[in-house]
Length: 316
Ligand code: SF4
Image 1 (cartoon, rainbow, N blue to C red):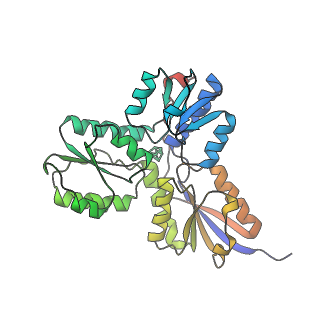
Image 2: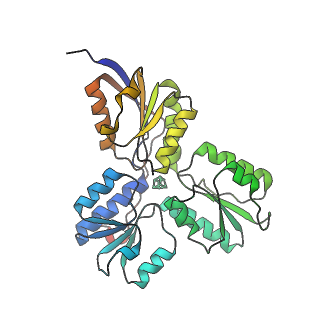
Image 3: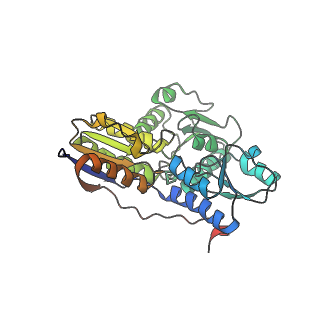
């Protein structure tokens, strides 16, 4: 038997599940326990196939829109990313029993946007077109009330109706550094633009990016456990690249590892997006242990102790 090559693994902490994802998954599980299957879920409850498949096996039925759901007394759950106002309105019209798993930190952005609108402000949303959270936030207000800005160039070209009555909000899972550059471009052109009272990029996104930023310059490669449609996971790969890590990429499952990519890698950083469960991190570490003589240490850059309550209907 050939001797295994040594590989030093540094785990970034915090990584993986955040309080909003944890709450959303609990809502589906508790609804299944309390009301039985089926439980309908609009959109992937969180962007992770392993989580979605596990809930599907327990009786959750995932749909993209409410019109795919037959008339039913079964609960209908809205995903952690939030929904446009038209969705609960439609559910009410159809007398559906719905439970909202929107992360409270996304709801905070919705409330903020509404407040700016009520004050007569024109709103800029910094975010990624097409992401369900962006669709949900834009759908809090009538069409045209919010302008989406994705880049510094967009901020430089943006022509408001009135430069003195502006406010901005952001998606919760953006790159902290990219967003700071876009905000700086907006503030340079519109010094009176209102900013969020407290950062819209959530604690989980910020902490996971900071941990990757600390570890990335000291490793030969960085693996981010997460899905390509998970915004915060994709941002972690970018953060690793920019922090000077020679190679970084997403891995969803241990079976996705391409061993040739790790030739010459002696030190490996591992993180996980906010929707990636720790089981998948462990599965991937175990796979590396089959191929290498691994040592594992953890770099902790922040402690997290945030938890959100589930809706009243599901509390014990
Ligand atoms: S990443 Fe942030 S905003 Fe999104 S669910 Fe988690 S805590 Fe909430």
